[in-house]
Image 1 (cartoon, rainbow, N blue to C red):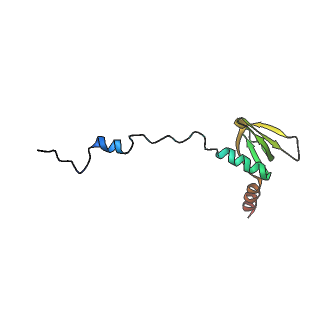
Image 2: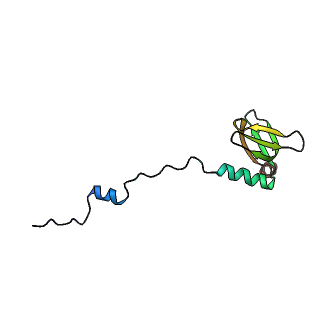
Image 3: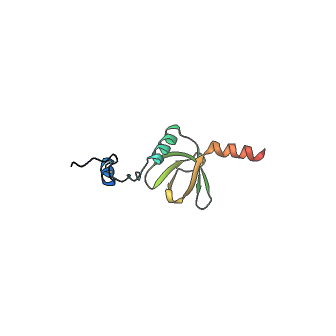
Length: 104
């Protein structure tokens, strides 16, 4: 008597067919931050930087590194701001739009 081959392979064969590997973890760096900074630097976009002490700074980003950004300003000295002191930042045009909406 010969053994018949089953239509459905058993679980071990299925795992072997799929490669038996786990899904890879996503990369730690997506380069989204780098892309954002480079885009704003290239166009010298006026930015608003809100610090952790609620101080608001306006200027454009000249350069950045892993720990800090350099903010150029027209109405004051250029600043080197450590990233851990930044609460968030956004384009200055968004602030103007928000204030227009607020008045209406």
